[in-house]
Length: 323
Ligand code: NAP
Ligand code: 8YV
Image (cartoon, rainbow, N blue to C red):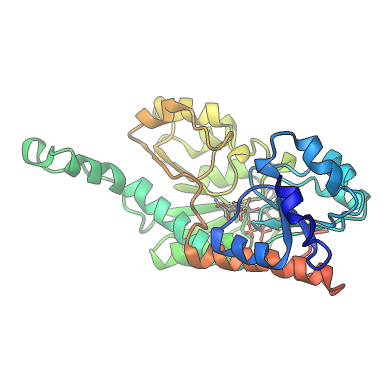
């Protein structure tokens, strides 16, 4: 039905296959400029894709919707997968490269927003602000007295796993809060902070372990029982990377048994599903993957996604290619 409606427009506007809804104002720009085919609304995916096979040269993707080799094969004219998000673990980049398809992402425009969230999550986790606010709202203050004491961030060491664009922005914020910084990447960087060659030794030194690596197979369960043991009962974990980077069931067990002090999480293994046992924890602060979710940042991400599509259709150099 939607295809029939769009068919007449495709002579003037390039066709784009949109995997899932993105930021609405940016999506409106995309829909004005391109003939957008909304894959997530299709009841029969194969039937939806069939008439598009010869027409669609671009996919606009976003987290939560996998772009794999089979989908690329269904679109033989495909030239670009333009992803909404700096993380592109939802896209099979190796499969794209083998087919000569370019992949782009949305780096840098979200660094400050995501780093703000990471720092806020650190403060909320150590100082238990959401829990103390819930205590007030539930009417307990007059009967129970003062809320229990919490833990300061000042003077603590933040160990950052994944000191990249966002990691450095987090480090600057943590320093402004009086924290010391150390980090682990696969490669040492020219930065003034101590380097640890592995996540276990960094966790052993850290009061707060901040996870901000890419997702995907390479980092799957990088944070496992060994890392959490090293972090220890006084240590806090904050994850704004991807749920896959942390062994979620082991983390849950460690939080339930007090084997680490607490966790602040923005990302989960099977979003939007979060194991309900997390909801009962007093030592966890849980955000629903909102690190970049401000109007300004999501618009900037959406426009960069569109600018990469524009460049592709104009035969110009892509702005932010990843392959
Ligand atoms: P980036 O600049 O590429 O930084 C990633 C860092 O991780 C690099 O310093 C890299 O250093 C390190 N790294 C990569 N693989 C590693 C591994 N196996 N072990 C240890 N360190 C590793 O990326 P970014 O722009 O800062 O974004 C980072 C990630 O944050 C994204 O990919 C995304 O998954 C996540 N993110 C989440 C949200 C959210 O909403 N929660 C928002 C934005 C981004 P080496 O190459 O030297 O190892
Ligand atoms: C978005 C993100 O929530 O950029 C990323 O890697 O995880 C977030 O900014 C996500 O891209 C939405 O699809």
